[in-house]
Length: 625
Image (cartoon, rainbow, N blue to C red; front, side, top):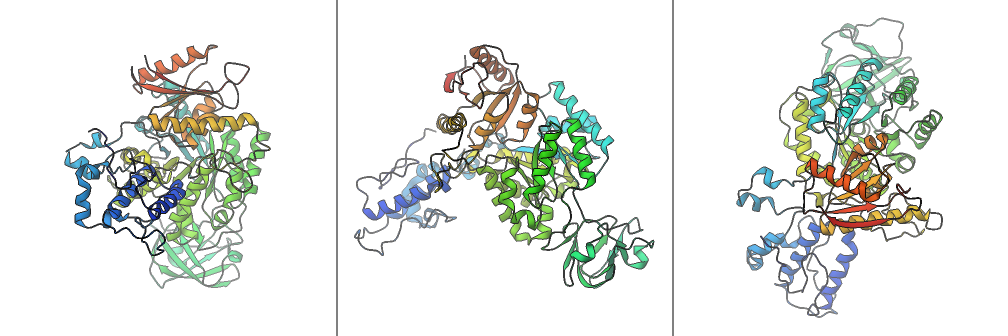
């Protein structure tokens, strides 16, 4: 169906907020207000709001411009349902079916219209590579060669090693399998490896009974740091805790959460080495369960002795990412980065934001980090659960503004550990993470020890792909805007104009403008990189098309596995620019990503020149021959 502009009394063209000469001053004022707020809306919202203005003003009586009581045609940019959807049947009818069709939900028409046309699910899904990456935790259900290769074939982008389980020998086997898969050529892009440290967890001791201890509301139970007496929890109703200062960190009336809240107990008294509790929410207490004090962070060192050993193991195995558990401040990140510098290792450091202290110090932590993980399990244990979505949104937003990858993790498809299909709420949860702009979503127990690891991966992959790309926001402030200190907002790094390296600033401008140009023309981006910097920068600006990043650097190849919208491909660089461009285009043609007659955008810019001593930057549009 041909795209036709909606006829509007305000004289507003499709997707534009320019008022006509016939509109009155009060309408102009409304338009100007919308323009000032527009940076916080996506294109599909602008279309709906523009149509809503017309629907409202068609029925309103023109009032004098100086009358302060003149109602605004639109309720406001933050209104969840524009006035268009609150109009009467007569007003809706005045728009007509064609006008209704023009309202776009981002990347496609309303789903109801697709169903009326009897379009299949495949026809309704955008035929582009999935932009949001998927991190899969490897465990007993996925650590064999057959199972791990099946996950990789199904779309896994990053393999997570959970150092809370297994030993270095078992993790070494997984790393070797990932490297074998990458070398096999079964996929053009490579699987990254993320090592997730155990961290200073507070855990209960053995309970003695293999099936655990059943506790009901009102029952008494004691945690102790006295390890001198062997206990049978089924008889003594007590067990040990692995943290000597546990009795100092908790207080009377504190709520202890077991494994994030599957059970809870209230502290009644503290006597010597014992913490005496009353069960609030009952359940079965098994051995070595994770304990949290609701609303408080334990005074533990962020990096344990075992963590340092695991980090050293990761350096030796050349993993790509470190996820640090229970980070409370920026100091820990700096310590780990110094550790990497001493060992001459290039590994991205991602703090897991999962404690009250981490949220309190979020800005300082993100400033020195290479990204972040939203670890919602422990966040929901230390903070009210209703605040976890708000914290998630904040972390995703701030990482995106700084051009750093962010992973949303925990309970994405928890029910699929035991069930072959997800709950509808879980699917909606994945959609929210994708719409907020997360670079990656993560599966934990679903792929580590679940019954249906492949099905879980397929569900999260198809859900992420089904979200229209326009619903995932780009940085909300244009690159050209500056704040009071003269710093550019929306760039990969917020830097002062007086101190910035001019080459870096030019590269940022190129990335921003290349994104806008490709958004208008709807063509894929092809670029060549040694370090991965330019590909990451383009990803930061969230182009609607796919970024195909060719690199001759194996580390950059794997590191880009976590960046949204980037498909990293290996290519040895020749001395001639045109030869390299031709090779890259031919590779994409063979892979079926582009075809003859398609238009592509070649971006040549970065921190360092690849083929010439002088750094010549260009944005070139060309047709595939």
